[in-house]
Length: 261
Image 1: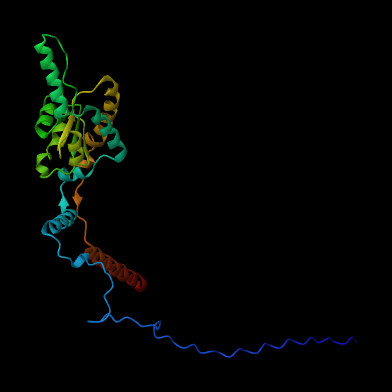
Image 2: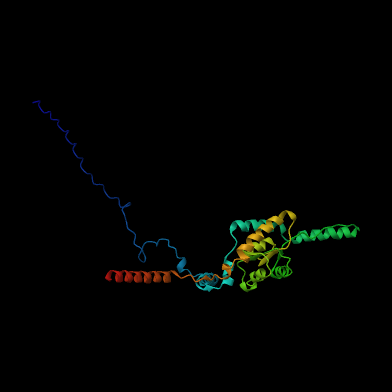
């Protein structure tokens, strides 16, 4: 029998004695005490506790109230605006037919007056432009001159334009609702504008206008759901939680009855 070879394990190195470090009072942990007269309070979001100006409070309350109330279809249709891509295409077309600025009109009239003084014939016609303002737009629609009507979604008071979609449907004039009155105002050199009507365009742009008119005729004029859909009626967080709790209790009770059967 061969002899077993035994290997001796190396001895463990002697453990070093632990050296106790002296605590430095300058870097010692000192938990903060946020009691009165002690540590400075941490920064918190105090917007809920701020005393906001009255107009800010009214704005917020109005927004919540509008979302809670049931909004009739006639007013709710103004929340269904044109999508971004179509709106970009529409404003690109309308920007070509912006009304004359005061300076451009003055320069044109001065040229005509100077030509008349010299007994010359100068044909400077007024350039093609969109009709803007509720009175001009309604006149164009009633005379069936308007090819497309654009209405702002945030006109205040809404009664100024609430009847305009119905008039456009009755007279078969394509219309659409866009964001916002300030954007329409910029188009016509004003701060805000309630509505704009495209009356005529150049030959190059007639195809674009017809395409847009066809799209809006389908999505606004002939859309029956828009005239029937009520808006608003959104519940608050507390009401939603209460309803959820009630539904859970009813489901639990129904499950218990099934087990008994």
